[in-house]
Amino acid sequence: MKIVMAIIKPFKLEEVRDALTAIGVHGLTVTEVKGYGRQKGHTEIYRGAEYAVSFLPKIKIEVAIAADQVDKTIDAITAAAKTGQIGDGKIFVINLDHAVRIRTGEADAAAL
Amino acid sequence: MTFKRPTSAGWATLAIAGLCAVGFVDAALAQAAAPAADAAAAAAPAAPVPNKGDVAWMLVSSALVLMMSIPGLALFYGGLVRTKNMASVLTQVFAIVAMIGVTWTIYGYSMAFTDGGSMTPWIGGFGKAFMHGIDANSTAATFSNGVVIPELAYFVFQMTFAMITPALIVGAFAERIKFSAVMLFILLWSTFIYYPIAHWVWYVAAPDDVAAAAKALAAAADAAAKTAAQAKLDEVTGAVGWLAGAGALDFAGGTVVHINAGIAGLVGALIIGKRIGYGKDLMAPHSLTMTMIGASLLWVGWFGFNAGSNLEANGTTALAFVNTMVATAGASLSWLLCEWIVKGKPSLLGICSGAVAGLVAVTPASGYAGPVGAMVLGLIVSPVCLFFVSTVKNALGYDDALDVFGVHCIGGIIGALGTGILVNPALGGVGITDYTNITGNNAGTYDLVGQMISQGKAVGATLLWSGIGSAILYKVVDVVIGLRPSVEQEREGLDITDHGERAYNM
Image (cartoon, rainbow over all chains, first blue to last red; front, side):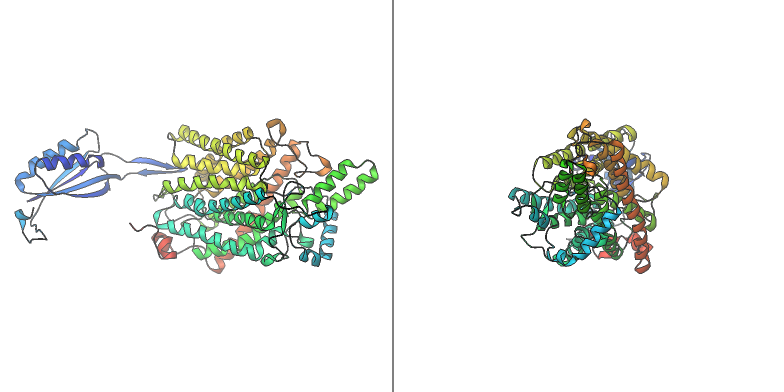
């Protein structure tokens, strides 16, 4: 089992969700996050005060999937979240040791 | 808001008037009703009766000015601080309003608007403490001879001014002062700075007498009659606040309210020091939405402030109303455009700041300038204020958190000096009328240099008294209870440490 964690542009969330649903991924966790990578921040000016805002708002999605689904999941997210501009985000794949569905107590593959 | 403004005729006269006032102190206490009513009653067979339209307008205006403080100013300021200090700013403004409502009733109105005996040029007395002698039939004079409003309406209208002026100051030291220190400072400041300055500028014992004496002087045929008339005029003009006597024009409180609060704010920012992390941490406004709502409420409320300051509902009221509209529109636009040119983007905070700068600048000019003059004043004030809140503030490094000095003091000075120019009939102004400057019966004349000297005198006196006086009061509060919270408390935010609550639980 794997967790695919993707940092994407906020306005791409719906497209990514649709793409994942289309390949049979049901369920994901979404978090509003801030950070920076190659896309630098911007300057905000409030009267005389200028602030360099280096942390930009992004969306983090996490999907727990079977290992054999990783490639098509990555492809789906990449296709949906891509704009071609700096700041499109990144995808990280992490090993998942164990999973439990709280309601039923089912474990691992049955819990996904 | 000013009463008729005669010119004082020298210290001897003032002293005589003072002695007379002392001699008649009992009578003064007994007749403690309106400043003008008794004198007017003596001159006319029947006491004037308030006009219903005037009364309605003054009560509506008073409510509008209250709305400027809460929620207007509170939201305007609150939106500009960080979330952790939002409740703190809102509480400070609300508590100041409430405290002044009490102190104004107990002694503030009396200190500002009664005869102070030999001290009359400087401060009023306690003859109307606890509203002694004021009832529903008491009247107060207006700009028009023989036209009065209920003294209770004048009392509450002036109360709302006394409320908002100290509330303006809290923006300068926002996010880094103990609530207890704010309350003690404002109690002292309103008592020793605001009430005296309001008295200097707005107290005229019997404006109708002044006007009558001026008319008599103008009509005097021979030298003897002239001397007698002048003596009478000197006598009645002795019982006024000293700036009222100096001929300075300030329709709705540019000096008393804005320059006064603005300089007190700057002094506070300097004495209290910068916020922790100033210049390094992100201190962006937490809600420009709130700030926009606040600025808009200020604009609406300001019609009560400026047009209400005419004390009647008539043509001059409409003039002040229109001036308040066009000057603010001009200033909003010019701040937006200047920012667009200089900083590259037209900002919401910019247009809101411009609106407030325009409102401040037009305050002293609202009943004196013509609408086009007021609009030009608005267009001019914003670039100057923008320069002060960005370039000057950054160069000097003081932390006037919400730009009380840069907008209110600087805008107030531009307005005060601009009023001296724009009152000129050649520029569409109303000119010098009988109640604005009657020395030598110069109603209808206009002297730029003389008027600018008067304006400068009012500005300078306010800057000095409020600047130095505030510095002393800040030091007193610092010694008694301390001005600043601890570093940990300031970092945590004043909402939790001072008030035990958060503005937002989301």
